[in-house]
Image (cartoon, rainbow, N blue to C red):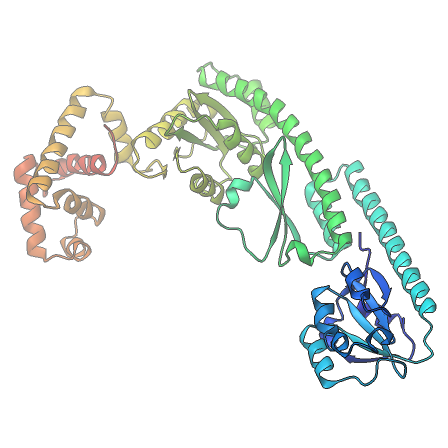
Length: 480
């Protein structure tokens, strides 16, 4: 509650008739909560801060030093402003007093000799009472406005919009505080929203610190926070019930049962998918920590749509409608927040019957990729490689060749595997490959001949190149 008047407000309301501001103009925003008549030598000891001090100088008649230290003492006591009656006991106003008042930003007013203290005291408290009363009414009005938003069943954004209108502040809302990471801006004011001791979001006031807010603004924000918490808790309860249904549907689809058209249509309608087009996203925890429910909550709130999911031990796989780019900003932010999490994404699937294949692809790429986030390569060769590795004999054959190249590189400090991968990525162009490797074309030819000698595969024959390309994939991904 704003239980004070700024010096500027007193000036604007013509609080002191026929007064003259002679110093301390930069202190017009000082806050005055009380008024004190200073006519005794020990009067300054009674100050508690934020007072408007009025004096005729009687206390200084026998103590010039007391007068000289007036401004410095007022600064130490956090005085809001000083009013001095002229033509009584104070005497002349020295340049030093004016300079100190300007230095410490303490406004100094000259009052007429006929000024009546009791009139100023009564008027001050009348103004303060009216302001406090107006603030109470404004806060109550804002409460009713915000409450009406909640009873009307509006969304969070509409409550935030109403807070912006009421307070004039640039306010926004960020769910899931951990996704903020190190992106918090010092010039913003972050207000945590907690439930059961856990920070699940922040209300952000842009370009302001807590000290910059008025009591009215802070009251509006605090009430809005209570409304937002109620909405979030209600949404979480709804989503919890939906999650149970979504998991049951996922288990049915993964069971491999044949889907009739009515069941398929009912699933698509329930999920809000207007076509069978989706990605599988596999989340793998490296330290066996089970935070799947947290990841699921983040996706539910951020995607603002339903998705299928099931758990695989401590890990989880989700199936997301294809309009959402699988390597979206959301997935990247989740990965940046949870460093002990790996994420693999399948190729696009267009039929619910392919859900097991999508699951397998996302799981495989998550397990074999050396990247924290990776998408299954859409190339035919990569898919063939996954199928080939199901054959134990072919797997041993390919790994044996790969091991020979690795051993040669290790023993001779060579770069045959890197050379092979670069050569294949550049469509067998010796010129482009040598430029990428920063070596001479003849050096590249020598390395290719060395690869052929070690592997027994000719880098100029199409059949052998296919096998070498599979080996190149093996060197990039961890299939062990």
